[in-house]
Length: 285
Image (cartoon, rainbow, N blue to C red; front, side, top):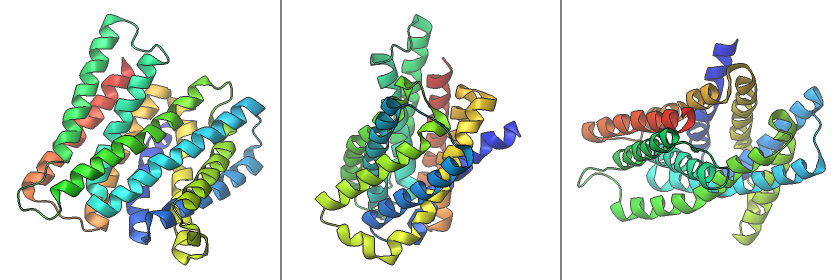
């Protein structure tokens, strides 16, 4: 059972990008549907499990969920501009770098010399891995300028992911207890995004509701990850969950038929190995 729980988060989070990309629609449709599906799933989990939490944790979890929207919108925009198989390694690597640095400067992690050396080594691996996955052949399909612009956009939107992943470290409540308030915060974040971007029409569009399947897939991964942490420990559960980037990258190529040259594919696979290695080093030490 514990082995199955280890693999389910990677499977769910790995399938989310190709599922949403395949359903299609604008990023507004995708983020609305994802949030709606998450809220539905979290309500079902709440009714079944009946977790309890305090008001402070509830509000902070809602805030974390709202920040998650910023990161997820960035990913969905990336899918449209440079494809799933290019966006996901870059986005995942940036998240790992960001959360590691927040852990060091805010939560005082990597307190010993060995931990600092290992952590810095892990970040170097992540940076090299991101760089390798973003390399394109000269004359290959896709605009280099657009790739650079998308990477810059992902750097800024990844801040949302980092805040989302860091806020729960200050909770007394965690796991299932904050799943519902996070989902509510995500829906509030979506409303704010749609309102200020002038895309409220997404509510009426069929594609938005079809994308709720993405939210259900994400919920499946999130709930299984919570239980994986309980049975396998934080480090083991986290490291194995990062295999999702391999699944999503390969899924982008197979499901969305995103082509890469032999050289680009080789560099992407090497980059993925380095990103997984970086995740291992930064989380174990």
